Length: 87
Image (cartoon, rainbow, N blue to C red; front, side):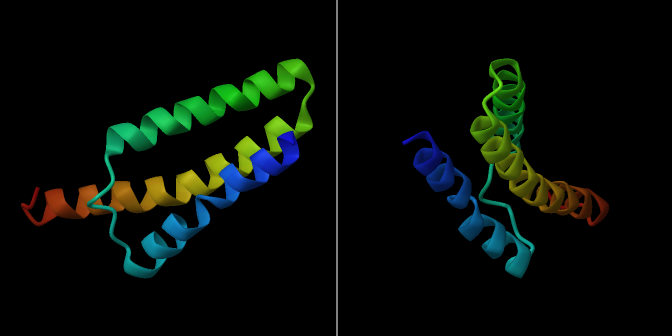
């Protein structure tokens, strides 16, 4: 059951990563939400290590990696907006 849940939550990031990669746009995503989610995933990874539960570690490591792709595009978009004088 845990493995299936981990698979579903991890794979749920793929459509957003694909859209972000294709368009390069993240304007509809809150930076605070992305950062808070990244912190939560990091804490799940630590929890998984402490419990010795490699399903938790693996799923959340993959999720955090996918989220980092989104975060990269978000930060790039914010940086470009500042350079052009946009919001």
